[in-house]
Image (cartoon, rainbow, N blue to C red; front, side):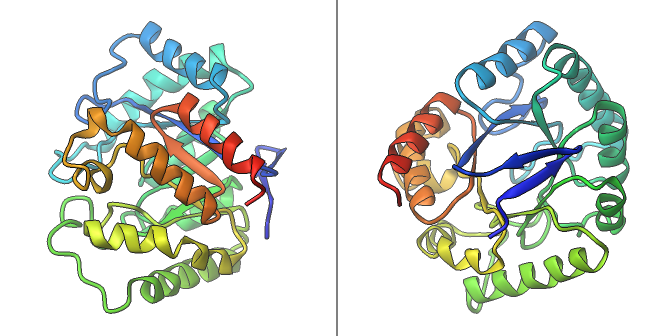
Length: 277
């Protein structure tokens, strides 16, 4: 399996599962929207991610929760510029991922702020220039599975055979990326993106199937509805459920956990790693 990522010339070894801390520069994300209204709030969050043992800071500026209003490229860029400038100034050595579906924004973030990873929930389906842009930028790319778009993905998602279809989807995308020279690819099964609650747990149960690609697998289930709906609670009270689900994901071979609660995820990794699963 590929165990390294070339991040702007820095070779990052995934010799243990990594933790990616979420920074949502949005007013309406399902859990932490509006939490960083000032630069001081933003920097405090980033410092916490680093001091609690997080490996990557993932910055997003568009909410992808079902029913979220659309955000145009100008507003997305404004939010990201406002976040990345101070983050890079104060944490120059931090590994930074930017969550965007727009190729031009990915390009500007890498060129202007030396962003290390592009995290695209659409796998290039929302911008047909994304794959070629990633090839030119030569940065690691998070390739996520989604059925539909963020606006339509939860309107009765149906699969004949979920894992077979997902593997076929990734196989085609990885082949296309390899053909244009992209080899630093991270696979994300896209929990909650065009999946029912049952679909999400089927993926978690069969997560090891995705290791067929011999690429790092990222799991983002932090405080999502697959957890709080099953437990009949809400996102604010879903930390314990998230930790349980992250433990199962690590046992299933997850290489990166994308989370809101970094300290708890780092502890989870340490315990699971001690068992040499």
